[in-house]
Length: 225
Image (cartoon, rainbow, N blue to C red; front, side):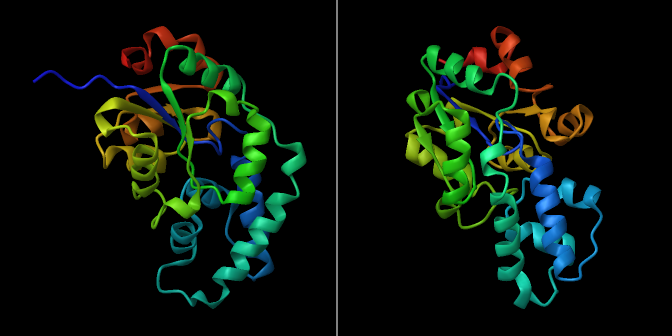
């Protein structure tokens, strides 16, 4: 039996399409500092891309006292919300979405951002007319590197894992896609190096959405129908 033709592009949003990775890093650093947890920003940055549940386990240990977790999340959310009006798309993000849609592909934002954050991110992207489906944190029981949000995106878009490519900016994105055998294109614009993304299993790596757009005809997306 021939391989199924892929027919959709799933895309992470934070750090992949919108320039938020370091803002999340600073927001978590300050939220943790307020609770007397001193965690270096470089360590926090390496955790961005996980959901808050796994991020706090990763930074503070799974055996920690979890009584502070809700307060830490609320502090992060409040700090990050202070930048909503200044968020900016990464170079070529909007154009990449439109180019994928012009190829007849379903464009799916596979993000685990909370609903209030997602509204701000979608406003920045200003591409709702070409976006087929959008997920949020409410759609996944577990966050990346678990594949739950990708499973939800596939189900909501009516796609099969054999019909898509995923675009993300972190090793956690690559790991989540790998659990479903979905090829993952890595973008280095979230601050994770090309070598790390490739080493995690990304099938191709580009600097940012603009670079992927420029090389679209030779990228794994070109094989989608």
